[in-house]
Structures are given as structure tokens and as C-alpha cells.
Length: 143
Image (cartoon, rainbow, N blue to C red; front, side):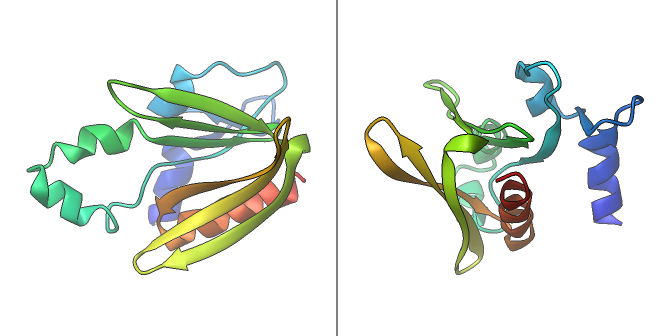
């Protein structure tokens, strides 16, 4: 049921049958290249972030919603922060390896990318285990 709801809210098929149309608040905020389609959108895991929700009396939810991970067929887009926001993209052609790492209740997708400074590893997460595995699969399918 949840995966069906996720599909309807975030990844509804485009009328022309090519990929998925961005239908989440996160994806609508971003600009996409022509012919680029969204593969998945993810946010940090609620379960892993539960202590932060309790300590901030729920205000952590604002930050969590502004912590975005978007995978398209051409790149991985990462955005973090509310007041001070940092956004960057990693083109698929630069990604050398992708791996799944689980730490307690959270899971991470680690991207090894080639940059001008050499090889860099970026950890995406904490995600739910399911979302991290989906992200690894989605990126691996486009390498």
C-alpha cells in the first residue's frame, strides 16, 4: 500500500510515457534539463531521526523536509539545510561506485565520484533501509 501511495505522489508516469514526472514538492522546486526524468526522491529516515524530533518538539521536521535527495536518469541532486542551504549535483558519468551501508536504524548510500580533486566519497542519508537500497539500485542501473 505504501509503495503504491509513494508511486502516486512522487513518481507518476508522464503522459508521453517517458520516465516519471516530478510530482513532489522537492522535485517541483528544482530545475531539470530537457529530457531528464526523475527516478526517485528521498528524505532522511523518520525512525533514525526520532530522537531529534523529540528534542526539538517536532521542529526537526522542517529541517528534515529541506534535506533532499533526488535521483534522475542523468545525475544525483543533493540539498541540505534550511537557513544556510547547500545544493550540489553529481553527474552519473562521474560516479564510479555506489554502495549500501546500514548503521543501526539508518541506512546510507555511499557514492564514490571522480572530481577535479580526485576521488571523493559522499554519504547520502540517513535513509530508511528500503529507500537506501532503492537509491543504490536506481543509481547502479544508470551507471
